[in-house]
Image 1 (tube, helix red, strand yellow):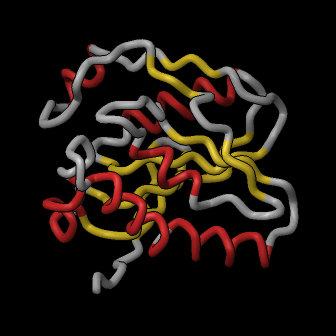
Image 2: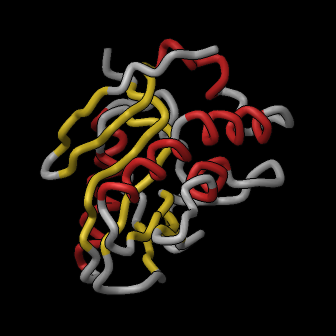
Length: 170
């Protein structure tokens, strides 16, 4: 059993809540594009995202939408979509594949300068004038989440906060 070490980091104007430190989950998170990754990410979503949203909607009864960062299908599934799917309740709904990166450059292991020089160029096709929780698997520098937030705000979307499984910052 993995015990969560919930932390909150603010990047720009966005609060990012993470359930684990990256070092505690690294071997599991690296399975995202392998056959076993589907089962692992689904289990992690059930252990973290699902209980979180249940508690959130109990204390906040407004309709909220869940937007995953780049729910791109690779190896037969989208790992972020597994996280957002687990967050469906009576008052929360996932807007699957509504925020997609137009730039497919791999950020893994890249520094801040590389990330800044190669923006994701997100395209948003979801609803406007709604409240959302932004979801991604890992926060490293926060650049991706900030870019996603900026695009959503440009479409009249109010980003309440972001959730990630893991935070690389120790």
